[in-house]
Image (cartoon, rainbow, N blue to C red; front, side):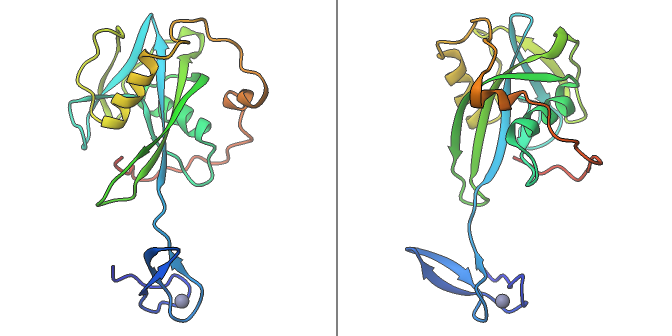
Length: 197
Ligand SMILES: [Zn+2]
């Protein structure tokens, strides 16, 4: 509470809209909607196991997680997933399917819509730890380490019980082909401080 209008700078006032108490501008139509953030994560199948990274930053320092992170406003989630893999495991990953979409409720920050993909390392190239990882390693699906985030545990659970697991990834067709479609020219890479998930 205690925010200001992005249009006119006036202090926002609380009003009930569609049954929710929201901060709105008394002068114009601005509403501070409480929207979720979108994140993407990938279960990367590699060398018969799953690629996990040991985190070198908080939250979850020293614990393991899937490669993934927040989706930028101008990014397709699939492209964000591939970018995060490049940043965190230093490898080009091909997405091979959609595992699921998850709501991660939070009370002290924006809730998260998590989109989880299956993927594999392109050309079976080597993987290595990016700056936010102490190390990356391939784990057998039946001997996974302690996972940093409940949402990633849920994704791994879904993966381990999915009927497609272990099956040779079928080429994606139709709408699914967008998963691996080359993105339009990306423009200059914008680096900015990473947000915690
Ligand atoms: Zn205003």
